[in-house]
Length: 174
Image 1: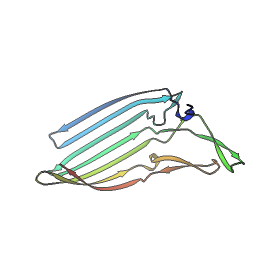
Image 2: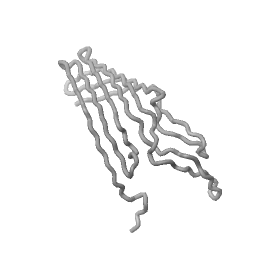
Image 3: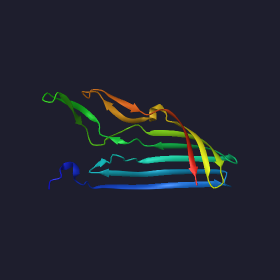
Image 4: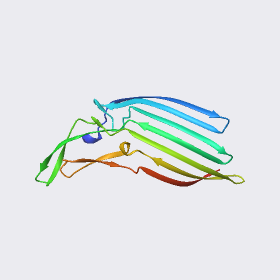
């Protein structure tokens, strides 16, 4: 049975190291930090989700008996992508076909994100309800989700996610 080129298995290598530190002070303050370093590649190219390093820092404080406030910062290396070096017009199908560069030889900009979190616990007899609000902020220069190309691949633009994202939620805990 011929399964075709797209279904064949590909050999590769990956490794990752994560250093983590947690600290708790009398059930009122909690902090957590991690540094992740690693690589993932196959056939002399970075794997699609290769991220050489990422840093996370979290702080959380119970400032009143049923109230909590927290902050998280995340920084990560941009994901790899295959650049487009040009295009060839196909008159039979009336379209442009991209000329691809080296596989995953370029990277999106590095990623940063700051989350602010505030929550209030409402205690019931055998369960509790947690109401929370969050605000996510991603700086514009670090907010590229993917690239978009014009119909003839002569122009490239970045597509970004929302810079500020407010969230409200409820969580039941049994």
